[in-house]
Amino acid sequence: MNYQEVVRILAERLEKPQKEIQMQIESAVNAVTAHLVRNRAVNIPQVGTFAVRKRKKRKTFNGLLSKYLILPPKIVPVYRPSRVLKEKVKERRIG
Image 1 (tube, rainbow, N blue to C red):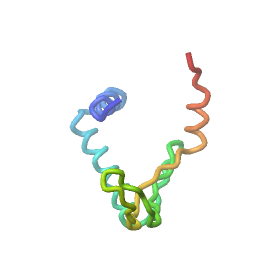
Image 2 (cartoon, rainbow, N blue to C red):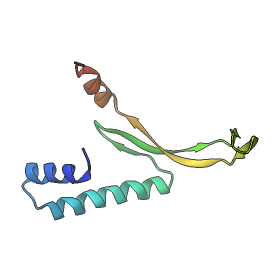
Image 3 (cartoon, rainbow, N blue to C red):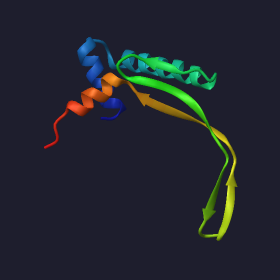
Image 4 (tube, rainbow, N blue to C red):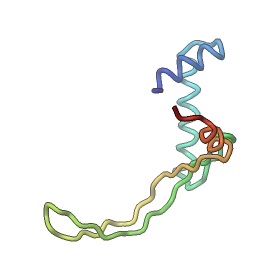
């Protein structure tokens, strides 16, 4: 499912124009992004938690240069799914 499909499905379910749904999704994403930029976690019930985590510096090998490189520490976004979401996905039968 891509962004346009989500917008279309929500517009049908909520009986609202797609433009309005797009603006609401954009607003929600901007709010989550603003909190993450300020190092704050965002918990969405039944979906999960979005947060930021600092990665330590690390040593890696570049095969083309045949050299070890030190990658600097950086801050990355992380997502932890909720227990409810995990259970719903786990219940789904394969096959």
